[in-house]
Image 1 (cartoon, helix red, strand yellow):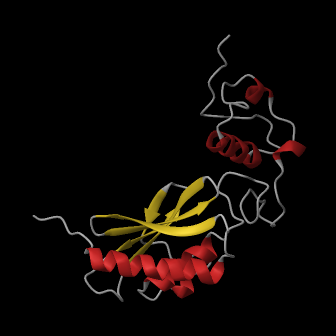
Image 2: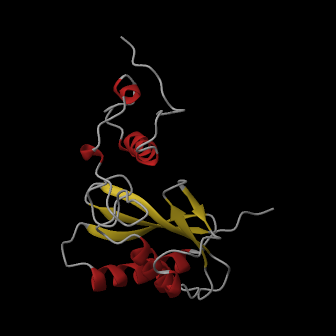
Length: 183
């Protein structure tokens, strides 16, 4: 079976739409910019912010330029999810590239970060909407002896903070990712 590819003229048309969106939303000279990566039948929508470049969504070319299938990138599980339909911006999805960019932009605005708890709408929050600042809560003893404690990996720190946050006030702290520091 032959692998489907997005034709070059469709790729060019998609890139022009993305460029127009960038020009209309970001100031000239801004470090923020959406761009596409094409692979097979997929258009992967990314946003570059300075040196950072992250996934936003995946669009599947159906053969009809006005009927792309959409899958948002879910940072919580680090994969594209075509079934996810409860996120800010979902209302913009109409099968077009423009609608997909608007949906991705609303879901992940430029001040949002998946790993930096101090940036924009990213970060950790309690159920009542109060931000969780990990620096305000002492680390459990187990964390202090763990090899992941302050290891510099923002993804690992996010997981550690989520675990600590979920167990605030518990009598015993449990961590299934714990690995004792090597001496």
